[in-house]
Length: 272
Image (tube, rainbow, N blue to C red; front, top):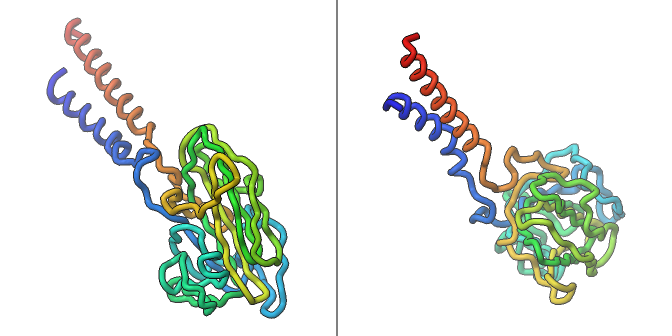
């Protein structure tokens, strides 16, 4: 093969392979935490009774798109807004953690009181095959946990409901049954929460492995944030993974050039 064809082949290979090589392999270091969307005074965009009235929502909201954009968004390290604040949600120090003063919390430039708001957290959670997971919600008022255990899926629907702790109630533990996955990787997760009726507010998401005992707050390193789920647009490439299409295309291009070179040599040898 002469240099001209060799350089052309290498150029095509780099053109298609470089983006794939730059992609983040599954399991590599990625952003931590969850994407959090907040609605002030509404139930994910739907009307909510103003204090002191209550809005006893019991239907899991996943799969029902919001008609209203969120009031504010941020990246939370994890979901630990309950016990750490005495169930008086306060983010005055660091997003996701507070001092428990009961004065409300601020997301960006928007201040939320301890009543009449809703939050949706979305992203991916890293789960390993061969491990049995148990999950726990502790919220005042209602909350719901969804995990899509289908490998590679970036969608959340009502079929993915793991925990239903809906309604108007004080803080209390809601535990899941055993959950396992077929392969190690990132799995789509969504947590929905709302507060009504004033008084206390807060939510914790915990897990335990092997048995339902010894629940701990899920650490930020287990999550990577993404705008998925019912109230946010899906990402074009939601799950960090190594791309296979580009190298295959590059290999096909290289093979095509090699065959073209062989055909050209055959024609020269026959004098045609």
